[in-house]
Amino acid sequence: MNYQDKKVLVVGMAKSGLSAGKLLMKLGAKTALYDRKTQQELNNSIVDQLLADGAVSFLGTDGIEAEQWADMLVLSPGVPVKLQFIQNAVQSGKKVISEIELGYATASATFVGIGGTNGKTTTTALTGEIFKNAGEPTYVLGNIGLPICEHSLESKEGETIVAEIAALQLETIETFRPRAFALLNVTEDHQDRFGNMEYYTYCKMRAFENQQADDFAILNLDDPITAAQADKIHSRLLMFSRKQEVKEGAFVRDGKIVFRLDGKESEVCDITSIRIPGNHNLENALAATCLAMSMGIAAETVAYTLQTFPGVEHRIEFVKEVNGVTFINDSKGTNPDSTIKAIETMTKPTILILGGYDKHSEFDEMFAHFTEHIHGIVVLGATKEKILAAANKAGVANIMTADTFEEAVHTAYHAAPKGGTVLLSPACASWDMFANFEQRGDIFKEIVRAL
Image (cartoon, rainbow, N blue to C red; front, side, top):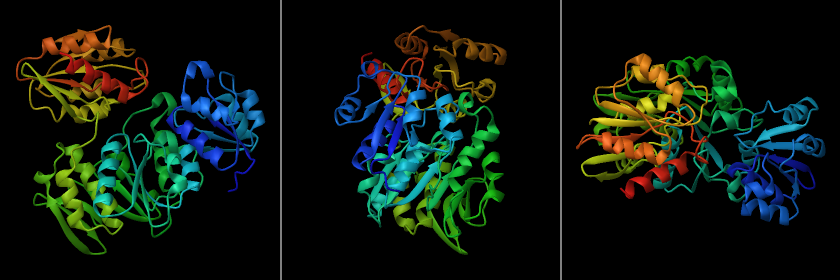
């Protein structure tokens, strides 16, 4: 598509929108910026530079005039499609696409993608590391923190973009086609945005809709919702499972990861040699194995990476031990299912810090998964009362509350026994107190290191 002189409105001035704006300016588009916040409220040097370079400002407006000005809209993932001015654009037949669609359309590299409610970031980083260890020129982009538009234009044929892709980004794709894509799991999340699980699942499955017969679709056989989508796949289906053998894909046999494709099996490595702990990370490793080996990467390279990859920041990340208490940062635990996975890795008496922005999640299931290692909880944030109600209903003992994040960390520290653990895994988004989960995790680490 030729963007020269096309009037394009970028909606949302977070990371993705800023990268889209910069890319559109390079492509010669007449670019406009929209956000509910004014330029002064945004206080962002990239916004300031884009405006100085000639971008049109609709910042701080209701968006109606901006939509009327534009020929097409590019949406940041956090922007709901149901907003009235966006619906006006859709109904008038204007192109409305996501930042990843723009990035895909302007990239020359092959795309390998990872989706799912939980585990996306770890699996994306792990898969990217496998490709790099194989000597492949590789970009690791998407929801992991660096938008696709940031590097799409410089990517070349023969290179690979390993991308973390969220349902929020897939909602408005058109041509996005990954050569291989893994859907790790589907559990309740973002119900404030999607309204119900059916539509949420549909948006996640959009990752496969443009695939062709020789592309690879990778599904988790152990996740009931994901496994049930197999009949919707029209590309090459690979499954992965830590519980049973699969016809084609990756599985565990006699304590080893095995990959099977076209009737040929390859042993990868012993599961006890995988560096990152937990059953959820074994599933991530199986998915990464499918992605890499379906694209021709050798089992030896996959094994080496699984045995050396240390994990990602903010996901079950060791921070510090203070007077015999270990602090773990799992700020990326932004929904109950993710926090369940963190809880299951705890082996010592643990005080769990919970609470944050309300995405309309339910917490009963999380408390049902509490192990004997959870010795108490500290609750704060916008979801405090909702979590407290669920905790009391479940009969959770040793419930504490806090009004500030720093108070929560100190309360958990004083409640934790010597030899125990303080786990930050809020089961909620961060937006009631922080810009994002990264900032929440960074501030947690600052508080802990000051103890």
